[in-house]
Length: 255
Image (cartoon, rainbow, N blue to C red):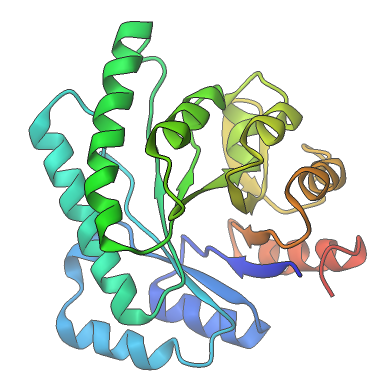
């Protein structure tokens, strides 16, 4: 059975909780860097009370400026620190999983040698993080090829780390067909982020906007990954969230 979540990245956590409760859907709570660093113990206690009654909870960790495969060990260290902080808070809130971006930037690590070094660093870093024994979903952003994710998962060989395929990002920043992303990564895909985008621009438009053939994408996902995928909507605003939910219902993807 498909589960429906929303990542309301433009809303503060307490606002996002209330919206998700009202709609009866799960929440992927956004703990971007400024939110994460401002959280105090009493804030976490308030969140623990507020998330009770949600129809599922996950946490989207910080991602800007965090490069898990960086050649600079200090950057890797602070990235690991932020990820660990996120996981500890997530466990306290009772989140089912934590999501992080891989943040591999092809233009920066453009040669095969640099890519190999980056991947080795990322794998070694995540081997430390996975000791915390919480499921982790890894999301694509500017990566232009699914192979870096395939290599990453094959190297880690862990049953605690999975793929969150962001359809809008794959469409916006890759020239490889979404169907190939799905085929290559199907053994690892557990969650999918749904929103529509333009080529080269991540606009987070509502489902049904006409930029992406989302019915075809969802059919390919179901055929390759089964029908128990977690669907997480990433709307730009509350109106687009409602439009996307209605589109999923009208097309039979949720009840």
